[in-house]
Structure formats: structure tokens, C-alpha cells
Amino acid sequence: MDYIRTDANGQLVFEQSTEFLHIPCCLYGFHNTETIVGKAASGRTVYCFQGKLDLPESERRCKCGKRMHINSHPDITLRHLCFGGDLSCLRFPHVQLRCSGCGAVKEQFISFQTPGHMITDALYQYTRDLLALQTYTNKQVAEITGLGKNVIKEIDKKRLQEKYTIDGKKLIKPERKAKYLGIDEFKLHDGHRYATHIIDMKSGHILWIAKGKTKQVVYDFIDHVGMEWMEGVEAVACDMNSDFQEVFEDSCEWIQLVFDYFHIVKNFNDKVVSEIRKDEQRRLFEDGNIDAARALKKTRYILTSNRSTLRKKDEEAAERKILHKGSDLFKTEDVVRKGGHEARYDELFLENKLLFTVDLIKEKLADAYRMTDEAQMADRIIDIMDICEATGNTHLLWFRNLLDKHFEGIIAHATYRISAGKIEGINQKIKTLKRHGYDYPDDEYFFLKLFDMSRQGYVRNIPSHRFSD
Image (tube, rainbow, N blue to C red; front, side, top):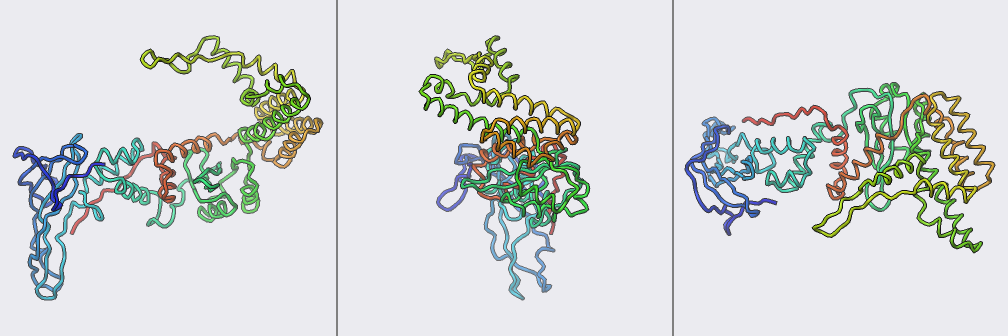
């Protein structure tokens, strides 16, 4: 970070002076008499505008009616706007006044200083504007402005509180009603600590965030927006979290829960395909078919992929698509897409009847989620359930029960056609934001950043910060 170098007495260290550079007369009551140039600890040039501040006669009048006298006038230094890559500051005597009658003491008012910070209002506003762009990380804004990272965080948190809260104590209720909602949990910190966010599926705006992934999160959201607001909601896209489902069914029975293709397939791949592959590998080892067992190693990606995805990769391999360009300078070679994915896919399923059944179910699931009629989609889901039951396999029977328990929410996709795509997209942005902020130990600040992140492209209405005496 850029800190202005000081001597043993705490005074700025400057190397030269200049008489031709003066600050524009935009700071009320400040008169620039001399400008000197120094260096910050980072090596950046610092322009120090020295001068004096007017002391109006009205400010010298005490509340008791008597005229106050100057008690002391030590110098004060305020950070000011940058000039390109150079820093600047203001230095002037700051008068302390004392009343000879009642003994009251007060400091001279500085109209262009930001309360709580040793910076000018112009630098404060410039920093807010940079943070509102959402283009730079806090660290980058600190490097641009020369301010410390804690100051940047304080400025940004206040900006976010003004925009999304009422006096920093309560979130502002959403102005527009949402027709479709999405709800999902995400990892907040290590140690199995999670948080839940609820979004407007049309705009992608986060409407609510809270720690945990329990029923209380949804109850608190409903209390926040009110039942009148909830009456406009028709459907909610979510995963198979039974707690969320129970709250919506209990409090808002008219809302239809929709379980999208992504979560169904994810459960199928993680709990069925992967487990069947492991079982088959163990069976082949026990039967002494070592070569076949080894052939199942490292095949999870192929088994959980769609045929269309593998076919596309084979086409890219035929065109010798370069995944990573090599370098003569660093003696690295081009990494070219390898082929044979679809052939390997067919080989695996032909060798194993159970895996062939798994492939059939994947195709039928994709076909079911293309339906726009609930009756047709229901027929296809029932067909999948019958296939699972006929196999007698433990993992496929588990999947059959999963479909049965969430049957109504699954076939509702044919009517509402909403998915968790936006939710998963926000989850990826959350991970990126956490990396940039080194996990954000301040949860309130992190949640406010997420609100802001979900509204990229919004029209900012940054209030002007003018202070008067």
C-alpha cells in the first residue's frame, strides 16, 4: 500500500518544491499558497498542497454568545485526489477554539473533509465511484487511490449499506414482485458452514441471503417480503432439499416447486453412475478379470457425459483443436484434443449390461425434460422408474424413490420451464468473489457484496456527500 513517508516527528518528507503547480479552487475556504513534491513509501510521487483555511467570524462565536479565541493551530494533512499515477494531499493549520466564558472547546470545521476519515470528500467520492464500477477488486482500488485496504473496505461497506439497507440494520424490501424464484445453498466457510440465497429468476438479482440452509431461512425471507408480495410468486426452482420444500408447501401452498434437469442429473451421476462403476470394478477384480476392472478406471467423465458432448470432442480432435498453445521460449508443446471418446463410451456400455441400462436412463431423462406437456413428461418419468425397479439394483432403486418423492415438482418443469442455471451461475461468481477477497471474514460485508454483484449493470445513484456548517 502507498503510505506517505514521514520523519521521526511524523512530518511529511519532501525532496523538492515547486511554485507553478497549484490546486484548483474547488475546496471551500482553502487557499493554496505553496506546493511541494515528495515520495511515498511505494516510490509514487506525492504533491502536497500547503495553504490555509478560512475561519469565518460566525464560527468563532460560542453557543453562550461570547467570542472564542484560538487555542492552538497544529497542521493537519488530508489525502486528496490522484493526478494520474501520482498522489496528492492537503496540509494546512487546523485551528482549535476555546471560549473564555464557558470554557467550551471545538475544532475548526472543514467542509471538504469526509467524516471519520483523513481524506477529502472528492477522494471519498472518487473511491466510491471506482468501487461501484465492480471492475476492480478492493486491493486494486487501494493501489489506485493510495488508501489502505481497511479504509477501502469501510468506504465500500457504507456505500452498500446505503444502497441495500435501512440505516444498516434491515434489508430494503424488493421493489418489484417476482414471478419465479430460485433458492440454493453455497459454501460460506470451511467446516461445513453454509449460507442460502434466494434470487429473482428473471433478473438474477439476489433478494435474500442468510447463514445456514434450514427452514428458518425461508421463513425469514417470507417475513421480510410479506405474504402480499409472495402472492405474486408462481414457482420456485430448487434442489431436492426437503426443508425448503416443506416451508413453501406449508406457508405458500399455491407455489409450485420445480426440480430442474441439472439437479436430477447431478444426483443420478453422483449417486448412481459413479457407485455402479465402483461396484462393477470391485466385482471384476473379485472374478479375476483384472484387465476389465482396470479398464473401468478413470472412466467417470465418459460415463457421466452425454453422447452429444463426446461426439463434439471427437470432432474437435479430428480438426486437431489446440487446447493449450505451446511455447518455443519455455520448451512446451501444443496440447491437442484427443479423440476416441464416443468409441470408448460405446465399448464400456456394450461390455456391461447394467451400464447400458444407465445410458438408456440418461437418454430418457434428457427426452423427458424436453417435453412441454406435463402428461407426456409424466409418462416418460414413470417409464424411467419402471426400468430402475426392474433392474433390482440398489442404486437404481434409490433413484427410482427419488423420482417418486419429487414426482410433482419434476413434471412441473414441462409447464414452467425454469432451471437453476442462473443460480449456479451466481454460485460460480460467489466462488470468484471469495477468491478475490481472501474468503471475506466479515460476513455482512460479503453478503452485501453479493447483492451488488448480482446487479451488475444497474443504474447507480450515488448520493453526493456535501457537508456544511
